[in-house]
Length: 272
Image (cartoon, rainbow, N blue to C red):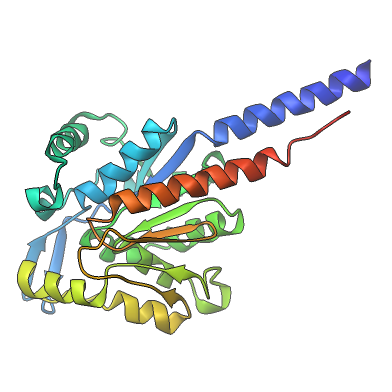
């Protein structure tokens, strides 16, 4: 009888742990708000791209997951002004208004934890999402915590979603210890980078040519035409191309979460 009670206790505790973990996603956000162009000659407002963040957030929370937000030094993320333009919200203008209200009023968004705290809490998260925007090319690109988080989620095979510019963060992991070498990966395409620099920002940032660097590192870079709704899933890694790729990213990321949950469920203790 004592043995049976012990087995039941183990199963219950295991289920509680897995259930809790299966409910929380870590969103890592840039806290940068100014981008230097043309070797510092020009400064431009920047930050997180609103729809790349909010559509992913909306997707996972509507699927029943909760979220923690983490930024460098716990500074509230800035939204890139460009991303509020209606052209990025085709048929989703009411969602844009919802997103703007969210970033203004949500208590968790406006009180993010630090990246160090996120690392302390890493076992509590089932997955990681890093939205795009030029901001991350300024602070997350050089933050020592980013490769630690990426390597942890890769080692544990937890779903990792990197949106638009965020796949560039794979480059923060040295090749010799990079778990994503050989993976299929997507990101903002070379032509899209050109259009952004030439016609939107009207200047060149320091960190650029993401696709070329990913290929050089040893990843299998995939792309489609500019403005394509395109994302790639390779095992636990989901990457997407641009602000118009939200639905493709969300489908693949939820699939990755489902696969991870099924795998963990199959590992539950069983006693006949």
